[in-house]
Length: 370
Image (tube, rainbow, N blue to C red; front, side, top):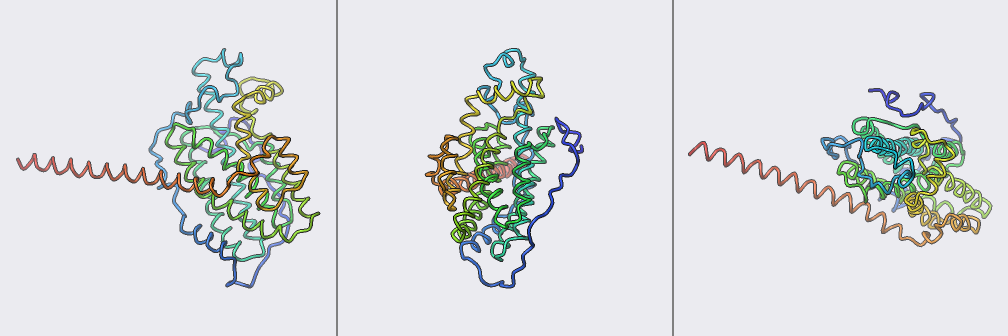
């Protein structure tokens, strides 16, 4: 079924065109690169995988409870709207929320694919071009997987959220070569990683857990790439240039924070926008979710050298300043380990099934001989 037939709201024109800015940069040095980045490039090649094969698409998903979301996590929980809903309507609300979340993941992955391709085009260093080429493939795979999950398992999509679209547009329209790194690798990818992780660690459903664990294994490399490249570059910038990047980060963080309310979902259930915004803001789960979503961004921003007073104050105002001391390397290592453990468990189960099949065949043969 065409995607347009599955949108809960009208997505508008079939193409969003963002005018290209900046220069395509060629380099003629092919045998000199940063050892850390070339090692990451090798890892990116070694860790390529096929989303059609690695993920068990035979697993069934109930579209009305795709994630096993507890009632308390729903923004409407405890309100008169929730009390009036029957079980069917609550299931439909879960479907819309899962669709909205994974649709934003899908649109974000397409944005990441385009930004990675833009980095290949614009970054001056060949080692960064090499790695970005592997990331472009990673992001294409992620978009493919999220698209398939939404089409085949949820049966519904949502258009891109206005704030996410705004940040993507700002990132792509900027002519400076480092801005796709900063907007995508640090802000959008960092926030997505935290959202992926929270759902991965709380969902009771095996298929979304697989999808998120395997995507996060790739994303851990992407964030490491952004940190390496930007840390090296930002050491060379003037204070004025650093402050410009910090202003971009501040605006982007507020946009991303405000993106998380899912007001579009509540509006589709007949709740006026202003009231839907108030309900979402009062949700204790959303407040916790919002704080945790900055667990990957704040330490990364600090690590790459953007930590001026105005940026620090913005994080204080958001209530996330203390996350600057989080161990980002540990979080990324855990992301990779979780995917590897999931693989090991799946392969062990498949091996047990094969052994059982062989034993049954032997027993059947022995009965025939007898």
